[in-house]
Length: 317
View (cartoon, rainbow, N blue to C red):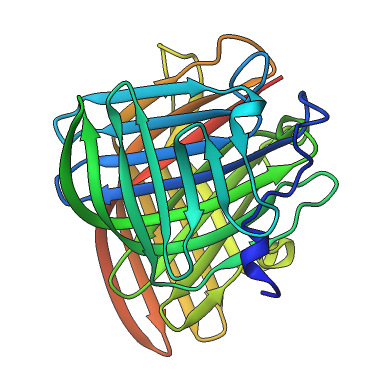
């Protein structure tokens, strides 16, 4: 990718000119060796707030089932951004491309983390179009180390991590009803997938970024999604609490040259339900998924059984 470092930098004008349509955020997550899952989002124009404004969102999903949820809103005068690389500061919180690794920090009400994320698999990026958001997968899979902060107490942790970056100029709800997104990390290969549900009918647009330490094996595109990758949503249920219908099972199959993938993701247990309080906005679920994946490369087949963090987002207009 030409000038990839800049692809992970700020893209839209700031201060934000069109608050109701434009958006940009940096997303980090980590599966930690203490059993916790961490998600941190640095947003320049948080689409889940009204009025929209900069924010940092931190979620810690503890191994015991408890969720620690924190949100801090910022004034635009408290935000510092770079158009040359990922170097984003909201107050004292930040995410920075240090060259060779990322460092991100959040501490809201004594809860957060300070971690270094070292990429293991190569990056990939897609520019934003008129009606589609830009997507930079800066770290499809990497290792993390540092501290997690809970109730003001720092604990050293290690684990696996992920970082991507999204931006756009039009509301995604104009095209999509909702989406499923997640990843499967193994010692050999990384799968970062999405299944988008269009507003009309029951048309699905599934795609995947597949990488290993040597390079990109399969990259998302409209043509590859239509002709090489097949997605299916099974075991649909209705959540009585938030009122949305979602799939308890996702099946993604891919055949491309000498590479085949058969991936099944089942909901193991929910870790977050976040209902929007107004429209337009986004409601979201996060869950731990139980994955069964069989990969065939050049005729050599291997099956993986893993558990990972996934999400479902509903775009309410």
